[in-house]
Amino acid sequence: MNSHLRVLTVIVSYNFSKWIDKCLNSLKASDLPTDVMVVDNHSTDETVEIIRQHYPWVKLLPQHDNLGFGRANNIGMQYAIDNQYDYVFLLNQDAWIDKETLGALVEASANNREYGIVSPVHLTGSGKDIEKGFSDYTAVRSIDELQDVCSQLVEVPFINAAIWLIPVDTVKRVGMFSPLFYHYGEDKDLVNRMHYHGYKVGFSPRVKGYHDREFRVSTRASRLRGEKVFHLSEYANVNYSFGKAFAMGVLATVKKSLSALCHGRWCDSASYISMGLWLLSNTHNVLNSRKLSANP
Image (cartoon, rainbow, N blue to C red; front, side, top):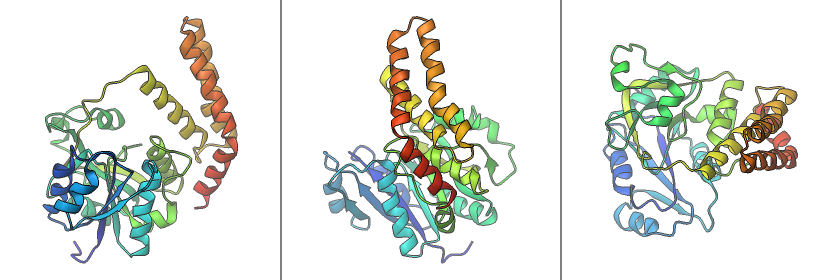
């Protein structure tokens, strides 16, 4: 592997103090050196002070407002483009990696240029199990399933943006996160765009990362928020004709509203109608996003 390859790790933080040591120290211990940028989304805890005092080697960019996940990551990706980095490594604040992970991902990406996004196996924060979201997206249920996998990368339809390595040349061609999405859904939209431009998405079965989110509790509000961003990403999906996108985005919420109504779930029915109206009100922005996705 070329020892002169330059990697910029970008971490978007908001009240990062719980994970700072594990996250940043894992990058400092990486076999492949990386520059690290933290774009802080106006944390209300001691994140900024801790980084300034204990991690002076980190490039810290405190924001005056919470820009959301996508816009904050775009600051880092634009910096990587402007400063001629070879790769950008997007790492969630609640994630960390083994020392060999980054080097293996860069090697896998360099050997498989058809992949726009590569990621390690995502384990829980304890490291004992496959992280649930990763399992849902990849159909990998246990670490044992990967023991006999010989390929350097395994292609999958989607991996969430907790741990992504992207060649900067790919960012230049495909573009960055869409401003249409504030928090959640932006990674799905970018993966859709990767596919549109002929890139694959995959993970390396040889190395691991850790995503500490098993403590999160699913609520009705979080479920509906997930539904909302899913249908927005379907409406904006550049791989669909606009007619299909309208059906998968807007009309699908009407169908779900009627289904909820038939089962006596009045509140859910009203929520889906509200969701559909919100999508309709954003049609102009969706059309602009689809245009930019096709011609970034």
